[in-house]
Image (tube, helix red, strand yellow):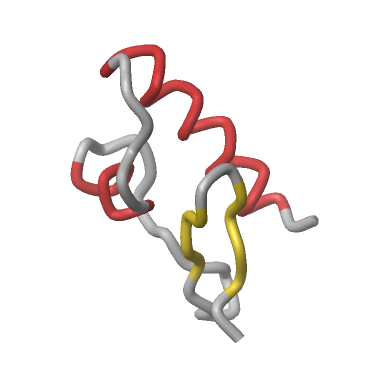
Length: 57
């Protein structure tokens, strides 16, 4: 698993703790300044699907 995905998973937990709810998408993390980007360094987009973060292939 990539470091980007691991970082995003950690930030999902931080968001949950601070907002008492899960983000509806990774864009919530970006909008709330938890992360700068929701893509991999190679430009691959990522998506929050329930409890999983997946690469958009």
